[in-house]
Image 1 (spheres, rainbow, N blue to C red):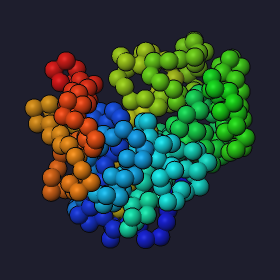
Image 2 (cartoon, helix red, strand yellow):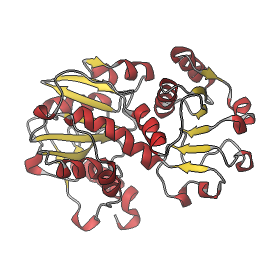
Image 3 (cartoon, helix red, strand yellow):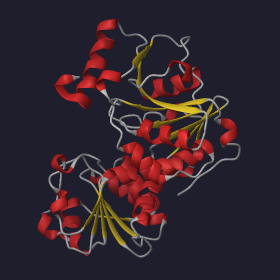
Amino acid sequence: MAENLPGFGQDAVSGEFYAVFGNPVLHSRSPQLYNSLFTCDNVNAFYTRIYTRTGKAVCEIIREHDLAGANVTTPFKEEVIPYLDRLLPGAEKIGAVNTIINRRGELTGYNTDGAGITGALDQEGIELSGSKCLVIGAGGAGKAAALGLLSSGADVLITDMAADKASDYAETIGCNFSVPDEAVKKIGKFNIVVLAIPPGIYPFDFEQIKPDMTLFDANYRSPSETGGLDSLPCKVIRGDNWLIYQAVEAYRLFTGNRADTDIMKKGFKQDLELDNLEIRVIKSDFQKIGPDNFADMFVDGRGLDDKQVNLIIYEEKSKVFGSQG
């Protein structure tokens, strides 16, 4: 699933600025992952979070503020596509982008989510070639998982309540499709089951899961928030591994370096501290952001009044810190 273009690498990132764009975004642990790697590798670069409201604004900010690259999360993975200059084949097939490289104002979109799931499974010593895989969910994550697994030689079936969407995608990439009820009846026949659906939703009975199966949950919520998957008799891989291994490929695109996953796993465990939280507001395209004015999160406040900006900040902090935020 690795895709590359000539000209990217460490010569392009010295002293550069990166960010993850989302709405919400303060919860993202991507800055902990990348900044840990930058420090370890002595790369003079910096990574933060940027809250904005549209996919168009994502690309505007990357260009206006000269970000060297970015990651894109919900709900912008599809929205950004019309505003990019170039799309790599994997991202084009999936119809979603999670990584953007800025090369002198030309924005290229990639999708490293497929590499994320295959990398995490490889790390667990799970053989993908010839494995029977069920992907539940045909959103951006599910599509990336299906393509990544298929490219690794797995026999893949994808299912989704939106049957037409899943069926069309299965035809596009050459995997199998089934409606959810039929797929779930056969769940015990699969070696790997990928849950690419909202946390806590399980369209199967836990009794159907066999000990020799692997369940991969795209979410990285705690066990108490995801319905006790740890009670299952099989191997359960959580979404933090997916996040880490998709970031491995994105880091290669950003810097040309191989990421140290041990450093990333330590970084993932670092929590934000409310008392030390720094949030800044982008008020105009002329107010450049960069490593010299670091913040844990920037809010795209263009066109908003102070009351609207303060409400965004309050809601973001509340999602991460609860009532104390």
